[in-house]
Length: 157
Image 1 (cartoon, one colour):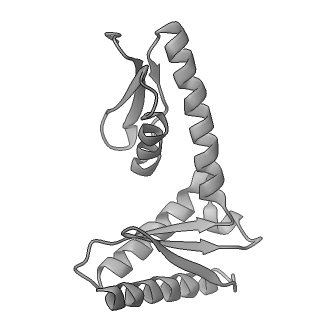
Image 2: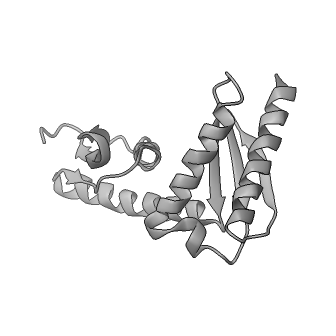
Image 3: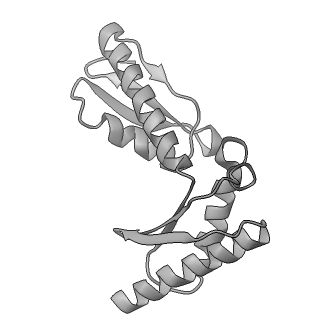
């Protein structure tokens, strides 16, 4: 199993390097595991083309790479790509923002409806607020309109 994981890690790293070369970006890729997730990190100054507007190009790259790697195995595996710390920075900013939102919900009792988010961002919000006993979170909506709602415990809405 570990040999297969190492093979998948090498495959994911190689495929991402090939994609980066296609974009004209010749840089190394750092690769490792975090649980069942293959984490790939790219340090480069050429971020605009690789990240895109609000991370859309990065998300597409990640989706493409996931399809390529999953096509090579029956194992449950997920590939996460971070370009120049973009995801890490965005996650920190989102966490900080929703913690401030939660504080307002606790103070005012008013429910907070966050903007629509992708599944990874919603999961991050749920985890960021899980340790606050005064609030709870739930996802509402469908498809691209799915969003997290922050409510004070004991409130009806």
